[in-house]
Image (cartoon, rainbow, N blue to C red; front, side, top):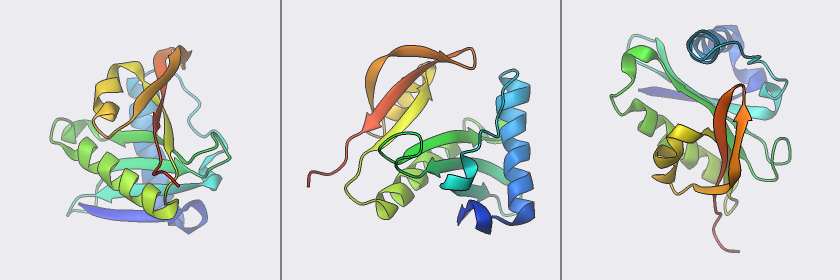
Length: 150
């Protein structure tokens, strides 16, 4: 997998198009009507994973601290349908956590996770914070990976 880590302004039109197309296939077509472009992309890092043929297979974004939560926030975590079950989602999330902790050493990471993925994110050290809530008609949980002690 070839990983690209870029700020929004540095994505370029091809990466931006591919990321939005993959997000649309997963979040809009698979999961139902959803307003994906939410105005936060410009204040985030974007992690794209392409296979050897150059096809975008995995994506996530890391929102800057203070935009959505006090901590940096990983979201829009997706893999293409054809590669699900291969472990690529775990590789993507591990890469995202690594990039996040490098960019903001010692800080925690907060996520809004689909409730059925609590165990997946728990495997990376995220713990549930608060009660489930609906987001885009899907039950979600706020989860936090505590930062390193100061």
